[in-house]
Image (cartoon, rainbow, N blue to C red; front, side):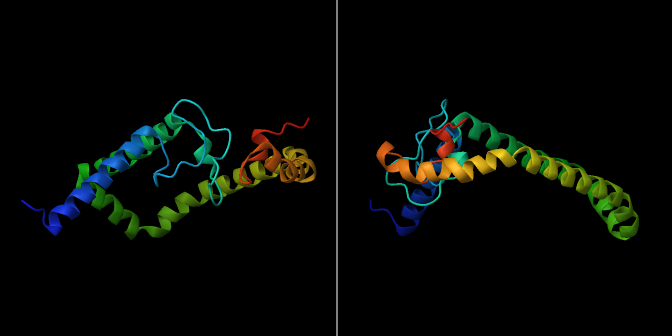
Length: 168
């Protein structure tokens, strides 16, 4: 018996779903393109040949770290949805109360927002001061060396030079 067009579409969708779940559980890139030599237990050290474009930092992470992040994120979303719908009347009353008393809610959030902005500003300034030497080293020495050496060493151009160049 021949498959109908609908049956083929359902089968193709089921295959895509199974492959997607497999990629999530294996800690691989979700688009199925392998960009680095990272495995499930070991972090990547180089970009694979014939990889086009920029390789994101998460592609270098081992699969177990990617999997743990995905599981934690998914659990947080599911838990948030469960808690919001557990007592739907209370959730609706709480949101309605916030909506009716917008000025009070914003006034309560204002000191926290000012504090968070202050901490973020001071933290950013400290980070910029503390990492200035490293940025200058990267700009003056590591980046030009990478441009000169990535072909002879057999690395892809997108490889992060800090992965193989260590200049004190």
